[in-house]
Length: 159
Image 1 (cartoon, rainbow, N blue to C red):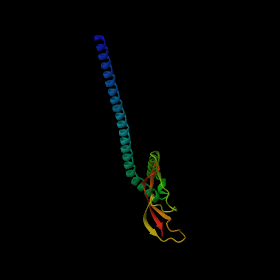
Image 2 (cartoon, helix red, strand yellow):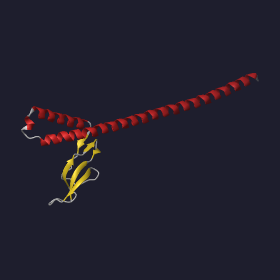
Image 3 (cartoon, one colour):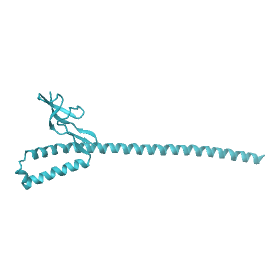
Image 4 (spheres, one colour):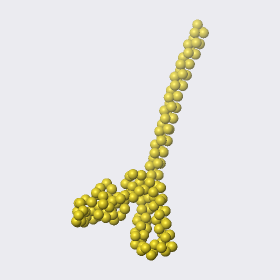
């Protein structure tokens, strides 16, 4: 009889230990899954912050490029042969290459149909021989970053 009790007690203890083991294992697996999800969410959040910081930096560089391009357009052919202007042209080229390497590409607006998703109308002008709603002139270039609008093009549109 005592042997049966010991066997029953041992069996109960074994079942209790097995049940506790399963509960601990399930809890550990849930905690591990929660940690993995947390890590994934944090990586996505950090990646988003880095994209935002990159966009901000690129947006601050675009006016510099705009001004350098204005200076390039104003320089006469004779000026373009001077070493100082040649140096500035090299800087413009390097800046364009840097932006391109970051996924920035310029929008071409002139002659295109006005698109409010890509263009910002600054002026409207009556233009003979031009269809209404066509971009006549690009006042300030627009840019895409990896296919997403970074800055809309400021344009003059035909009435």
